[in-house]
Length: 360
Image 1 (tube, rainbow, N blue to C red):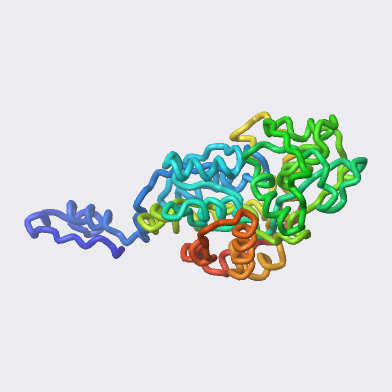
Image 2: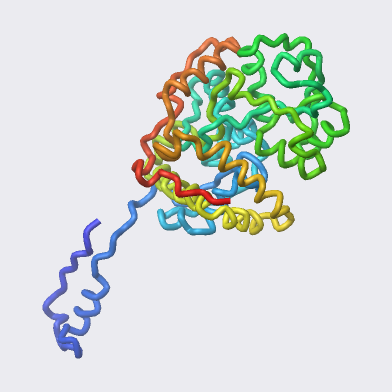
């Protein structure tokens, strides 16, 4: 937008002030100085659902809000805690939330099963796959096949459980030999430690720190990662209904630009991320979240690809392979392409997405 252009009637030039400007005209001219303007967004107030609780893996969202990075783009974003990827999807699909954070595999499954009501990913924050199956060493579970004949546990909405059929298919597991127990998320790790289940699914950044918090050291655990056992996938992404994205392109662009600044801020200053979490949930354990933050940044965010190409630099081939794995595992009758699932249209330039140096 150019500076305002005002036409002032000659009748208003009736006196001059000390600066030599006509009084009323001078005031108007001073108010009309050229000011860079932010492109007007279609929807200035947004509701956003995290994928999980106020933990380190979600810190970029309250941090972006606290730093006013969204406000600088003309947005007011209300952030709510999440309760799993399946819930994030439902919140967006129902229209209760404009955007949310969810596991890429869960989004693929939704789009396959719901043609005409597709979700679109606009920013893939986690370049590595966080999904794992975790057990105590005494169970002897060191590889996927060892899960047969075991009792597994997870909440129904857990991303690791949602994608377990895909993981099982890739690794040739007989799922009829695996029994599942559902529980609340806050009981998952406790039930593993008590021996009520043999293994749990979850995110690397959720299960391992939570087990450490109740006395199970990393040395006590066997961790079977999905990505090193045939399922090389992405982690969590920002999603919205395709229709919403098409109708609100400037809004999406503003959201992504602000979030990208928050991602870089979190890497540069992890302590600020933890402080932002405490501002939303004063009861969090700062030490636990600091440890979780280090795991999150090193294992899921700062991959060689991200260091070289920036945040949300998605490989179409890798994403398409993930889609094909989900199609095969669930026997989907429809298909989805990487190009229809993710768009890089709203990303800032590559130079603005390169992460800063990280120091613990």
